[in-house]
Image 1 (cartoon, one colour):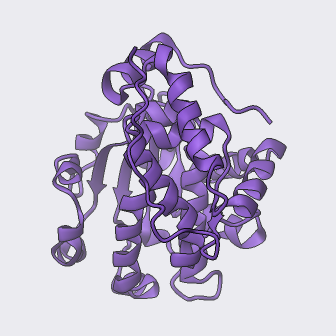
Image 2 (cartoon, rainbow, N blue to C red):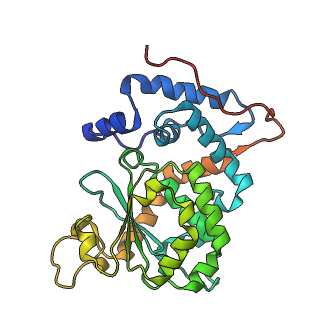
Length: 312
């Protein structure tokens, strides 16, 4: 299996260098230092594929200490927070059900800045418990996040979220549970390797205001500064997201230009892309390898900064 799934264009390489401290002349040495640190620890079980480790390094702006801390948190996740343990099969029947209901929609085309756009629709969650459990929903979200981040352009250019609160009600919030939402938000801070560029909130109402009052303290000021509220008007969203990138369900009735297709077709193609052999192989290995053997871990073996000079 190839370690890289795309070739970076000149623009993305420039962003990586200026915003993520990714120096092409230093990258190989920094990557090897990180890989050696993992391989030297029998208790730490993580894949050492270049694209996976680069995703962690990029998310920490190539700081070895922060990368090591994040790697340990990722490895600990299956035992400390089992709900977020990645499934071996990303397109199992239960996950396909979660994905095809459209709780998250990854749009097929990137914007002009090379950023991936994901629509999140909490109002599409089936809160009956008959289709899937809250744990299934959270694990499917983790699977989608890991799959998206296999793309190096996502690691560098980042993601824009459109959160559509249409049809959201307390039954859906209760289905997941506020405590689980809080735990998930706390864990994401420790292990998330995605670059969040913006969050556009559409059709938010009083329930959104109540949830934000309860959970807003868990959102960093940096993330808060990237939230854009559009209320019930899609016209405001069009100022940020070109219409040709959106599903037909999010476009005016009189719009006749190109679009991303129907939500159903987008989701069907997304599931098909996740079914590719190299993707299934990657998730199988990630599920099998990731973990911590606490019996082998010395009590004093905690991440420390690397003192190797990589700028000479």
